[in-house]
Length: 611
Image (cartoon, rainbow, N blue to C red; front, side, top):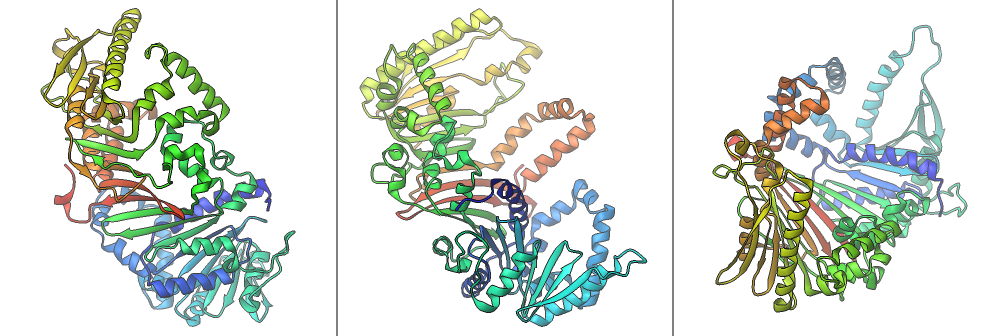
């Protein structure tokens, strides 16, 4: 059904803010309790609820956060200490202390009492309504909270005012409170329901008592969220263990006109299409998106899932999923000082040839223009069919830190090197073609550099080893002294191409090209279609290599003094040192897709941290 786009646009901002708040303090619940609580909450919500999120067992999460080693190290940071010395924070602490005294419990224990049955968030787009449903340990604890908080609210009324800021009415036998007409609260036995809109709250109260409610929309549906097909699909995607779980009615969002580009099934960026094009074809069709977050001492893991059907991708995105819809990526390559690696199944030839169907009109035109220019290097051959068609669908990308300690010229800005490894379907033919193309490219760069001036020429070198052939190029240099110690950025590059029996490697440096060509150690990626990994320790080292440049850039862009810029960059380095790395996997099953992202944390003492 169509929704009001303006209303949904405003609501989307509310949802993003609320989702962020929910996705912070979480811990895995007991499976039976979590399912029962979610179903009970969903049965109280109208069928046109567009967003549903739940948080379970907050008390365990609070303990996890309070006892985590990272928390103690954060408390030692000057920025952290300044934040918690503000008048606003001190006032908040005073209010918490009063609440603790009234309840006779410390706030961590109070959180556990209030959230024993879960906390649930819901929103529906008709008039930007949102609601918070709290399932406490018992109704008595909720009543105590109400009797504690209401006097504070009344105490905040201006002197001389006779109007009570809290008004009460009864709906279906339950007390409903209006608080300054800004919020509404319903006391439903062991449930508390808060909402910004009275009609939404009334729907929840009546569904609680009758089990159904006629919604004020054109279809006049008589069902709760629990009874809708989309929510039932989402429940099937629910993992056994999670910290927070969220559902979005993708059909309603799509039909509202929100995020048109996301749901169009086409992208405007070739790189985005290569990485996530298959996902967009599913988003164009699916009615449900579900997300879950797990929080453990050593990691945070966010999983986004959606129903999937091979037919939704069609022939257009066979390049992404393979002919049978279950294509798998090769393992992640490993090289020395590696900071990033990506592996995926992508038939780039088919993607290029189907650009008109996959890309927006403007992007497809750009690719057509690029093909006409590439023909110069490939002797008029068709880039999509003849050149990319000579490469297999398994590709691997690697980026690695460069060590310039004993190398001159040494660039002032030290970039990581990067390289790509492809399969060759017809090695003998492909080797000849790419050998010639690489030589032509180096010649073109030299001519262009001479015309522009200031860039030295690239000297080429060719060498054949037992297992591979390599052609490389390095910038000629006569820099000496300080100039050699702080050379231009292009000295990060020494492009090379390597040919092995079955693989083609293209890299920004000769060293990485040889390592990637001979790399046999690969990380298992558990049958993923796409996988990536980031090493935070190596990234930390790269940033340290460029710390002076980062400080100078901070001073230039933000107008900071050097001491302030050093403090901000130092804080960035300190925060990064808490992280081990990150992983991403796109898993494709017969009936669903799952994008799983994991952030690995240092959970031990300082000895476990990066240098």
